[in-house]
Image 1 (cartoon, one colour):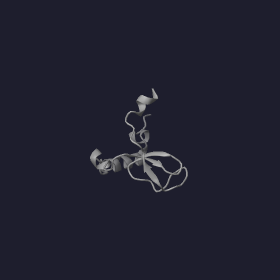
Image 2 (cartoon, one colour; image 1 turned 135 degrees about the vertical axis):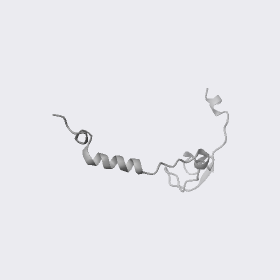
Image 3 (tube, helix red, strand yellow; image 1 turned 90 degrees about the horizontal axis):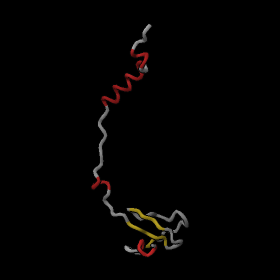
Image 4 (cartoon, helix red, strand yellow; image 1 turned 120 degrees about the horizontal axis):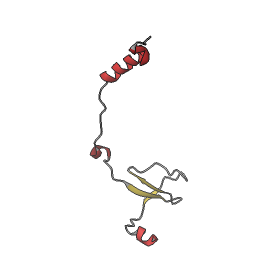
Length: 83
């Protein structure tokens, strides 16, 4: 006694799902240049000193809820000082 192929593989529901996948639009991909329009900026909250790296200045600090941000000091050799 052999089972029919549709009984083994999920029946009509699976075949409908496979047809929907086959007929679906292909996904659209965003190129890297479109996605990263803004440069990554390092900011420090002036209220509590919380540091954040983001592309857009946040509305408020997640720690103290202040809305004043300062640009973090650029420290290119800080990893050398830690050693």
